[in-house]
Amino acid sequence: MQACVRAHDVVGVVTQPDRPAGRGQRTRPTPVKEAALAHNLRVLEPVALKAFAADARALAPDAFAVASYGRILPAELLAIPPRGAFNVHPSLLPLYRGSTPLQSALLDGARETGVTIFLMDAGMDTGAIVVQERTPIGADEDYGALHDRLAARGAALLVEALALASGGRAPAHAQAGDDAEAARTLTRPLTKDDQRLRWSETPRRIVDRVRAFAPQPGARTTIGGYHLKCLRARVVEERGVVTSAPGTVVGTMGDELHVAAAGGGIVALQRVVPQDKGAMSGADFGRTILVRWCHGQAYPRFD
Image (cartoon, rainbow, N blue to C red; front, side, top):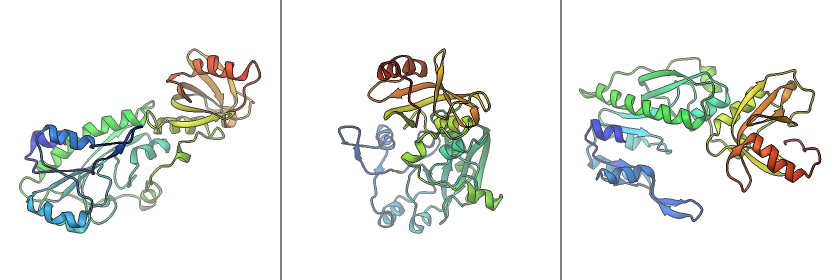
């Protein structure tokens, strides 16, 4: 929104209605609403989008700029702006359509992603592409870092795409690619089960799962019923180093807690959040929480 305000005349900002949030469940405005009010912009919070079409039409917008709105726009709304509805999507469409493109790409161990600005149609992220930019995913980049980096690029590309439409409809081309690959990467809302670390997976898969959910809500695991969030991890060895069962604690090194994974590999837990505790290094968790909790007995395995 900030980028559009700097480059264009924003006639209104549409966001989700205020909702309860936080531990106290106090009703709070969305960050978009707060930013819009700070710029003295008109804020609209429709509940029924079809009924909202009349209000949107009265604003006489040339274009819609949509980012992470979380709801499907009905045909009645999409038909309003003469220059189209521009959507910012953090993937290389047609890959990773849907609601969780960044987390899903990280879970897949993808090495590349990007940002696509496309003109919305009746489908789910199927509209014609106006601008698309590729970028590598850093080997240690987690969801939070990747999200923030692509959000900044998405804002800049959105302004670029809107400029292309200054004389009418922006030039655009239909999405093209491998239909089977597009279907394979179609994303879905992720669940708590997706956050659960599976020590029977390869070290790389475990680390990618940690990256996909860091810093929030965090990948989860348990050891003897004790709950742990994992915020940062790395692959120590891919395979063939230990004979211990997956999930077995094999020691500490520096700030890391080393845990056996599938195929004799090892994962280093570098940053964790134990239940009812603040964030700490993996080694501190092993040396303090686990030692006290096990009373000198052998550590149980991570589940």
